[in-house]
Image 1 (cartoon, rainbow, N blue to C red):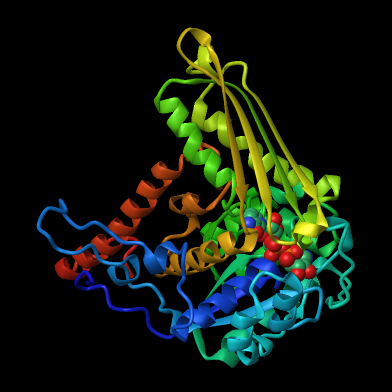
Image 2 (image 1 turned 90 degrees about the horizontal axis):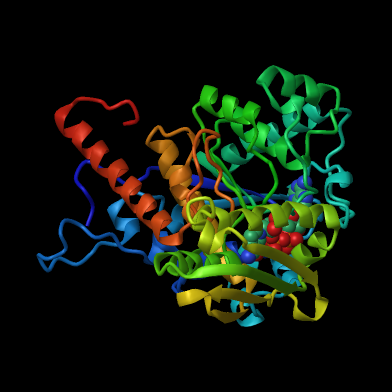
Length: 440
Ligand SMILES: NC(=O)c1ccc[n+]([C@@H]2O[C@H](COP(=O)([O-])OP(=O)(O)OC[C@H]3O[C@@H](n4cnc5c(N)ncnc54)[C@H](O)[C@@H]3O)[C@@H](O)[C@H]2O)c1
């Protein structure tokens, strides 16, 4: 069921992925399998989610999200990536060891045809990787120009009418915005003088924004979360979003914490630890990269539990997060949570959660959903931070004047209400011939 006056997306969509590692290849291979009817896109809100229409009591079936909103269909997607290692998507997927041969072999040729473009990479921002497939250039400004040329050439070569980008590259060392991140002019001067405050992922961000490609960040990096980038996004009218895919432990945290809060149960401590053996785990073994992840993971509880509003229940909360690189597990991340809670008259209880998950299996559908929804937002004229996509992120990017939404179900409501508004407002504008500012 499609809402009237919402024609389907025209043309092909190039999905740009800086970082062709475990998450990116698992997503790409899954889309290829789903297109052939050889796999089900489990976990994808755009592919399997439904929308309730009206009061829901007229017996009409709820339409799929992908039918309700004119999202790009899977057969209209083309993938393009950059990496600092030259392996094609098939070789990289084999290396990642997430999908088994019985699946990879069905799409082997298509995957092998995706060869990464050379990455823009300065090793000081990802200390554990020693990339060989990297661009050369005297300045960071020159690398941005090379990335922009890659984007334009890819769109042309694929015959794509538009592009969308999701950062699936490594977590970088923890940085904070400095003076170079304040304005467009200062950032561009910084690019020309190789300012050390400008990280690899920010070079991609600048290139995407300049090329008007909507861009979301799946890592905890600052990538597109600094004032100059937001200024440029507004100026170029580009949709942006992030940060850090919400997949395993934080997903569970943002479900459990609202439940404890709804029941007014107190929380004294929340200790979370993980073991992980993939390349992401290796990168996070570096203390500076781990710090970026830690900050992203820590923000969640305070925002949900609001200790200042409920000091008797949450005022003494101790929240700790650890990740240990443990190679034998590969992509099979194991997370443990110990929650020290208390109830009536302060009596103590404990809750233990042990999640044996597959990191990239949880992240892949999120990358697909973000790409399709960011593209839709951009087509509807939305620009700047797309906080309605907070559902997908551990550390949702938000305007400084606003608080992030972390509660998973509040995020789901926000997403679906915005989607409904984007579809219905567009239809109304077409009907009445009155063009709303965001209608295209
Ligand atoms: N569940 C999850 O898997 C999950 C959850 C949240 C966030 N993330 C984030 O998603 C990102 C990808 O995770 P992954 O498991 O695929 O990691 P990965 O290590 O398998 O892949 C990352 C790839 O990025 C490449 N890379 C690094 N710097 C680059 C650059 N400057 N240009 C181009 N390529 C570059 C690396 O060579 C590597 O191939 C990481 O930042 C991770 O923290 C993953």
